[in-house]
Amino acid sequence: MLTTRIFRPTLNAGQVYARAYGAAFALQSIGGLSELQLGIDEDIKKQADYSRAGGGTRDQVNRIKAVTMKLKMQDLNPVNLARGIFGNTAEIAGATVTDEVVKIYKGGLTRLAHLNPSTLSVKKGATTIAPANYEVRPEGLFVYDAAADAVDGDDWKVTYTHSGYDVIEALTQTAPTLELLFAGVNEAGSGDTSTVDLFRVRTGAMKNWGLINNDFAELEIEGEVLLDPTKVGVGLSKFFKVRMA
Image (cartoon, rainbow, N blue to C red; front, side, top):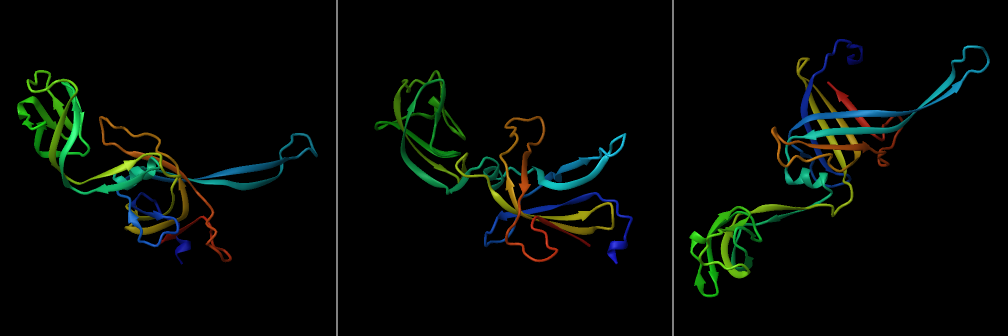
């Protein structure tokens, strides 16, 4: 029997799949992770022995306070980021914008409504503004200090094409409740496989998000494995299950 196997040094790699708790769609990979940890926090009640000198513990009760989870995600994709900032996502399709009106000021950036504009045409009234007056950037138009055809407060009409992109609106949702599956392979063994099913996990907000770093950015999330009331039966966990090949 596998339960008699003693020698099992472990160095796992693997993937984590997730979906909203109770959702009727497939589990999706959340991408790369540099760390995934589970922890069990105990509440220990001790009864002191006062029957003799020297004391000691007469009895003890160990109760589980919480099952905690911590992960560090390497892929800051829109879904992961939205979960970490309690946000909602929307997909903006590429399109052409005609005569978007913007108020410009020289020596700085004028935002456009969409990212990555291309094939621009800029007008003030019926007059075309020469490209020598501005620089096209992914986030908008940078109007030069020396722009001869620009006056602070001018309204320009900008026609452009933009590519598709995702929008994440932060702090618009409650904390996500997810079903998670870890699918691991033991590199220290002979490629032994294992899974850990976390039935119902309430994830917290991201701990930090390095917008500028000297190394690859990661998204650190902590959460708690909650009781899953749908799991019923003698000897069945309501929290998580481990399978080891």
